Image 1 (cartoon, rainbow, N blue to C red):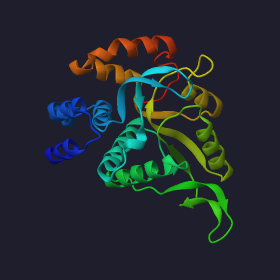
Image 2: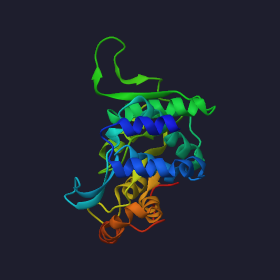
Image 3: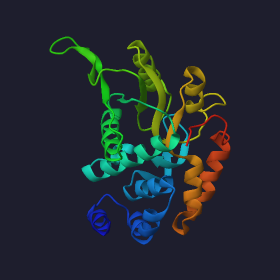
Image 4: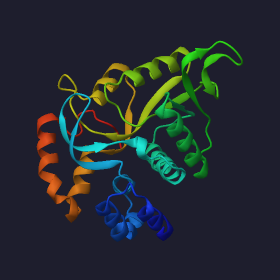
Length: 252
């Protein structure tokens, strides 16, 4: 683990505050039972989780930002896959296969499949092409044929469009979507009173499992002195746009 800290220190993309957090709390993160807090700490250190002022897709000014695209090397993707696998296994949902929606979901599903295999759960995975191939093996699905109970793996849910397409695609192939596995549930209202996660679950009856939620993020901020300056803004943002905990949000 000390080697990982040294590698992170050398990475110019990391903010010094994030590195200091990881260096001082590394033992705590390794020993803590709650992988969700460890995931948020890792995301902060990788600069995937940031605090400041950011404009969301909906045009809202958010005090935090989560960019899973910055898990962009072999080591970070390996660890990310482990967090996804931990969340899926902790959910207790029975599954037979993983599916990664193009494009981000492709690497996430592959990393999760590898992590699951390392934990003794070797399952097939596949992903879709944006456009069906009309030569070679043809078709829209790459990898194992869709079959049985399928978990969709992606980074976040914004408007839910990509997940709806994935659910419909899986069902069209005679398989059963049993869960959507994501990294972070912002627990944030969409155009109405429900969040995108809640709307997806209500429409399709498919549970959403998140590695971490806004509740976990609030706990994370509350336990770190160096993040206290951000707590009032995150709390205010949640009061304005958040949905109630336990009101049909992502499962844990």
